Length: 358
Image 1 (cartoon, rainbow, N blue to C red):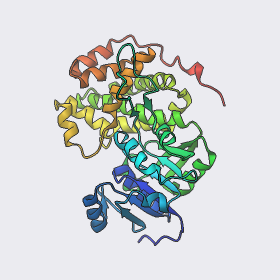
Image 2: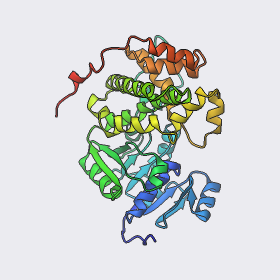
Image 3: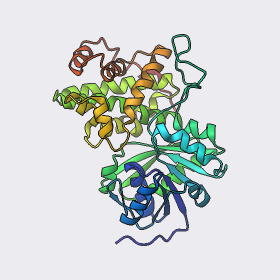
Image 4: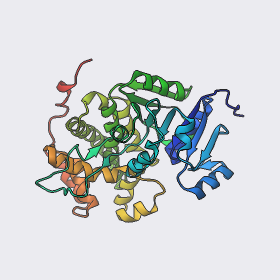
């Protein structure tokens, strides 16, 4: 039986999706009192009564709330776990209650797309990094918070809930943030690595979702493990080239948050993005799949954004381009795999010479 918290530390989690709930439980098991914010009042009431969130039993050290400002009022360290489409609106509402002493470590694996209403994206004014932000950049833009970090790695929420071994990366420009994340989250089944490459680690978490959608189509077509391995390895190379164009570096993609997360999301039916690709290959439409899913599959949005960014920065990304055609009904999945099997891919790992040494 779990013991009551013996710590005076109160930690906030914003968002009660599967990953947010899993992180809240890990924090609570490590003897922190956790304030878990849930946006919907009816859902908050139901979860408070039943003590079940996203199919996971809530630890007794977790208190749920529907009042957003309660989180920064009671917690110095906050873990926002909100889909990218809702993140900026949430952080704007939270901003007036945040102070420079707060620490935010987010777990959102998606981009924020912001184009001013008066500005139109076209050939003369293409989409650039000015319009596309990582979540840490959104936090810095909208709040007074200085100490920002992110979580990224092979962290399938159901396996975390099942208490299976896993690891994640806490990335931040501040060593203190990494140490805080390690202190709060590390236990005998959850290893916590650290990184100073905040943007690179964020880009890993975002870009691997594209490749996971594609890997799902291979599984859905039953093309075999050789084909899936080929696809994943080519996907990693594409992630590096796109990531470098967007401000990351190759090192991040070769670690746990890159290739580690890529393997997990490209090989497991617990991955939402993999599931999207699998169901597309089985003949369902994208609208049918999205409408039936309880949580957001970030990869679909990311495909659209990265395709435009790749065009702007003249980066050739055949996998992303092909998936873009698929989700916009310009190519069938069968045609796509034939196209990629005949695509003249560049040298195997010609980016390796550009990896910077410590």
